[in-house]
Image (cartoon, rainbow, N blue to C red; front, side, top):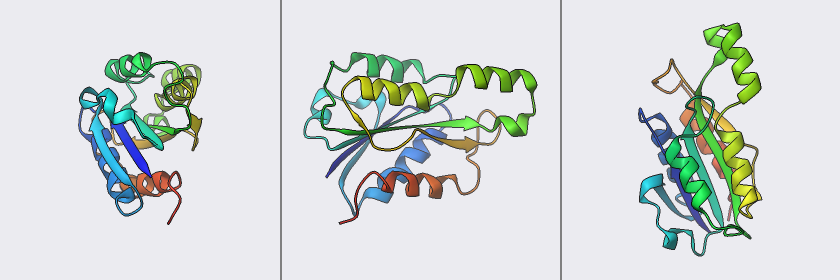
Length: 159
């Protein structure tokens, strides 16, 4: 099975999650983990699964991830399992009614990324996932890398 994990990262948290996912799949699949700006069209050929991750910035993916997803040709992900994840603050810890309202209204980055992947022809393999950082810049909350590894392993069947 060929898997590509594409990510963007500002403070390194999303990159850590993507790398942990790649390591978790190492024995189950041929896996590449690439920053969004390093992805070339040839990386998308012969794919069985595509996982895309972004930090949540202003309730959405980074501009680089949005641009890359928009650039994918229509139906280019036919027969490809797709999944999306983001890194985010835990709004429960911030305890802000205003922030809770905006998150409830706009959501996080993973949901619109997953929708775009499906719109490009992909088959949703997993519900979108969010991995928590402490504060706005991190670090990742304890246990999130392990949770990310468990999440991504559900996409690739055990051999």
